[in-house]
Length: 144
Image: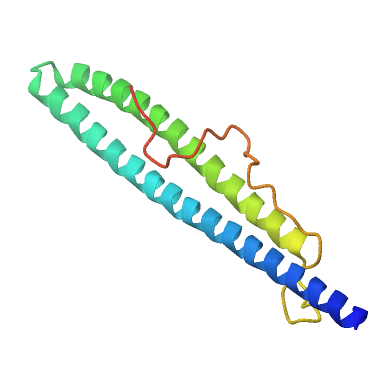
């Protein structure tokens, strides 16, 4: 009787761990989707910035070579800001991927006696923050 109780206890622990790991991975996947959306939105905002730069330089009435020099400089600045913003967002995506890999490694790949995935004693630190991560509020980084 004691063996049956211990077996049921281990099986329930594996189930709880599996459910917790699956929930954590789902949350990370959702965050990654939002971050990918933010990357796309930032790239689109960059396109609008470049268009506005080129349009404003055409309407100022400066010489063609002067406008081209101003445009190239302004476009380069806008590109560098955009690139930095995208790098930050990509770092967050990569951090989420590493967290998912850690969950996979901590839960194991084998199937337990009760048919659950994972092992006894696996845990995930949901409060861990990746490198240079700020508190998550997916959105386009502010640009000056």
